[in-house]
Length: 235
Image (tube, rainbow, N blue to C red; front, side, top):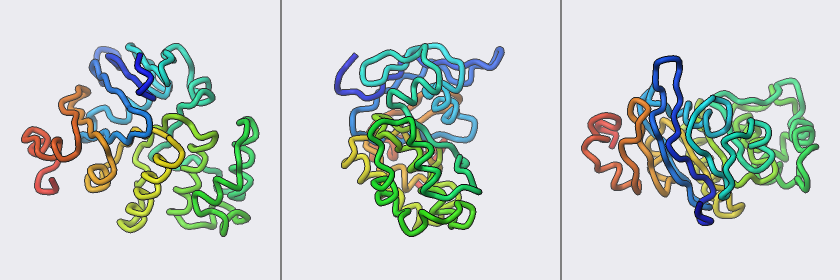
């Protein structure tokens, strides 16, 4: 255990019957750090996030702020500071924006609904039904729900999915600011390589469920194996 780390994952392994989907992955996320997690489809990125968040049975250890949480369920992990988002938004389309945050915040102590609305630029839409606002705004609403209670670690599974390039860049900048201002550590799965390499402090690369590279973005970008396998000319 190291107090410098918000999240520690040790020898994480996920099996589907006889298939090993994630094979002994270990990583550490420093406080206030953004770590990109990349790899081709089927590499195990979302499975890693599912296992860390408690949604997928796994072996190995998961520690949050130095405390082992491997035996805790999804809800228990969320209440002690481990949150996540999904590739698809988990908002309620028929509910007003403010009401969604208010209801979700009801069981979280000292949660400031107005602060979240302001931070995520949702004040102009707070009285609108979620289905009536744009997809980019729905994405920000979804993220505001994930940030309820200012978790110490947030697992983001393709938060830019479906956004335009400009919307993605604004959201990426916003995530960087939130990491600095709120002290939240991010583990980010994202297909947009420019976003990942642009905002990550460290990039981890998976291949067939195994960790094959881990370093600062520029070093990973220059790795011949990574370039050949995943990035191609986009590197």
